[in-house]
Length: 132
Image (tube, rainbow, N blue to C red):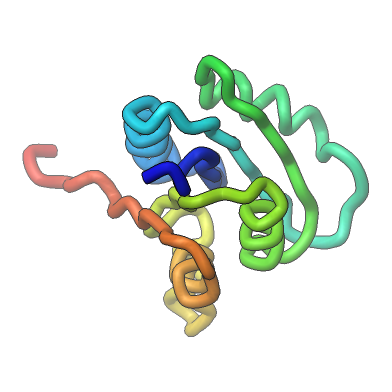
């Protein structure tokens, strides 16, 4: 599994992203891979949006991880970033903040990444509500 030297974890700061992060760290640790923590701010902005890199570091602390915040179309940016970093795996939560868009036919970012990725994608389902 040497092709998994670099793993991209995608966050929208949702509860499900937190769950997916746990899985991303497990996989990266088990494989000795570098973990890239990525957040995409929708729209055409410039530079680092409002200290988001620091917010990523605080929300998802991982030794040796690299952090990035991009602007634009979430799916396009995730796939481009993964290609740029020569990632072997993308880890993303099944539904996050963008879940409402799926109700209106837009589909989730995870669905779009999964359908368009050229590398494996680990889509982590939401935590079970059983026992809540």
